[in-house]
Image (cartoon, rainbow, N blue to C red; front, side, top):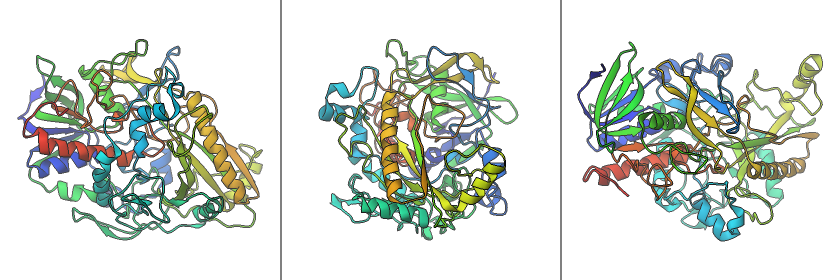
Length: 586
């Protein structure tokens, strides 16, 4: 029988970006907050020291910062006719673990979604008609608008010291920024990063084609910065070890470098590490969460009661815990009924490689969000009439740093190994660059999450099962973006280009992005969504579910800025409304 502990005001499950944000906001409101993290403590000065932090073998190839599939994994299939098999090695996406979660190893690309992204269904129906959305496409409006979230986007950008250039200040288009973005209430807190040669060449060519290149909004510091909590970050050194690595320079925003130095000192906050939550326990009515059961570092089961529970784990863990706890109706792809596991989506990417003879590009100089981009083909920024798809994405050159073991650019026709391969890598490493595309994925009836009927974890619980593949909509959209990238590449006048379109079914083996979304989606109707606009469970009002599991479909941008804005909006609703009158907020 589990040992039962004294109750707390609020319990946070998972301690990455959203866990830290929620704990900071709720403790500021006077609540006693406890966070449970299944991983260990990670601190910048100790675990990410610059004497060993830039270790490509340890951190990328041996996955030192990522979830260990031997401890937790999921089963994968492309469609329901296949038998799902366990993912034994991380590939397509890299969930984080330990304090800070995936925010430790993220690139720092920090976007606001477009206003039309939040009304994807109604907007596309109005502009293109019912034929644009086939019956198998299950996209929905979010139940929240860009205007609702704008103050919370701004709050997160100031917390992180985002480096960038506004393109739309209060409706006035600003030179040098992204003219397609939603209206902003203020300029970015830091100026853009300095640009190396590859993004500079891209911007020059794009501008010459009449496009509007702008600097990537970046959580890598362009200069030293003190955030509103009084925590100082330092200027980026462009070492090229952001993506899949922690930052030992205090130059990349993370929970460790923005919130934890303040939060960990508060007397009304406690963190317990190496505590894995295995179930959320409900009362006899099934309408109130009363506690969680977790397994501690010794293997003992513990019951932790709480007045309010906030789920802040990675999307896949949030959805699995909801299913295992019997909260919300599981999604049935045959009938389209149910909400938990519904509308899983991912991201789709492609690239165009450029090779020069007359330019030394020094690709090892970089940072996770150091680049120049164009947004002409994102969201509904362009007319989709007759194209056979909806959605879009951004494209450009984000020079993350060509790490030597990982990076071996070679032209078309180069052998995959041997002396000719080695010679081509040596000849092209300093003289090559890449234009990347980063595209949206619409939600579809046959893409979903559920519990696997065969495979179980060490505690006897079913593993999460992922059923996912790209559809014609995604392939057409990605091919369109790739063709536009190739147009810009040719204008840059390289010796040759290599076009890498996305072909065939989604494959879990090669890395793509860690941008999984959906499964506990938000909306205004409890029959079609799991949580309301405040990320409050429709079924269990004292349970809130953070993260990209709330996205009804996946727009063309990286998710972290919107994940954080939704968390801040939820925290505001809790502290300003829910605590005064606990119950349903919508």
